[in-house]
Length: 142
Image 1: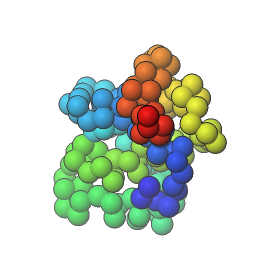
Image 2 (image 1 turned 180 degrees about the horizontal axis):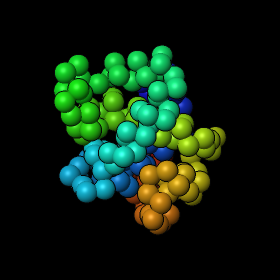
Image 3 (image 1 turned 135 degrees about the vertical axis):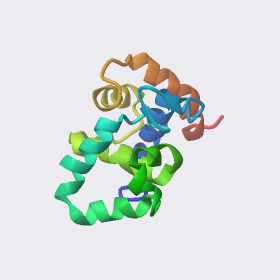
Image 4 (image 1 turned 60 degrees about the vertical axis):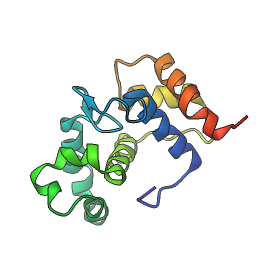
């Protein structure tokens, strides 16, 4: 990923989040939030105010992923139009929550993390179904 926090499980998890939240971008216009990961404006602000504000170096790296001028006038729009930026923010939501991903691609454990962080009212089976149809074929090609 863009913050030197790469792992195959993190990629798989974030793809699963994108699959369950926006059908991998097919449904970007949502009341629930912005972009591939459907990140609400409040959560976006909270990441900046309560997490990135405590780590100026990390904040600078994330800010460097955003568009130079557009971010200043429409920071939430970056979540829709800038994949690098939205992926970084989605990952920081996981980091800020203090959860650890499983060491292997376990859809049930990933679904629990998804529900805890991204979709508290979500059904585990919805994440698992999205992950199995969109992500598992990439991990385990036939």
